[in-house]
Amino acid sequence: MNPIMPFAVLVLLASPASAETWRCQVPYDEVNGGGHVTLADDQMVFVSDWPHRAPETLKCIRSGLRSECMAADLAANREGGASVFAKLHSIVWQKDGGPPTTITTRQISAIFEDHDDGYAMAEAFPAPGYTFPVTGCKTD
Image (cartoon, rainbow, N blue to C red; front, side, top):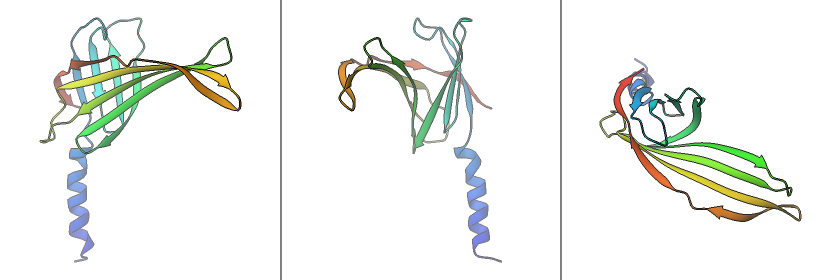
C-alpha cells in the first residue's frame, strides 16, 4: 500500500466536519429584525424577516475556532472624498464542531478627504458593537 494512501483517507474523513454549513435562526431584535443566517467557513448570509431588507452576504476568513466576516460599502462624497461603512462579524465556533451560539457585530465608519496624491482620514466614528444569539442551528 502506498504510504500516502492512509493519510489521504484521514484527510478526506476530516474534511466534511470542518466544512459544514449551518443554518440558524436569529431572534427578532430592533437591529436585525430577526430571520436566519447561513454560516460556512468562507461565507455568512443573513436573511432578515423584514421584506424590505435584501439578504446580506459577507466574506469570511476562518482561523481555528474563530471566523471573521466583513461587508463594506464605499461612497464618494461631495468634496471629492469618500465614506467607508463596514460591518464586521465575529463568530466563535464550538470546540466539539457544533454551531456557534452568538455572533458579535461591530459597525465601523470613517470619512476620508482628498489629500495630495491620495486620501487622508478626516473622521472616524466609534464602532458600536452588539452580540445577538443564534438558535436552532441545523447542518445544511
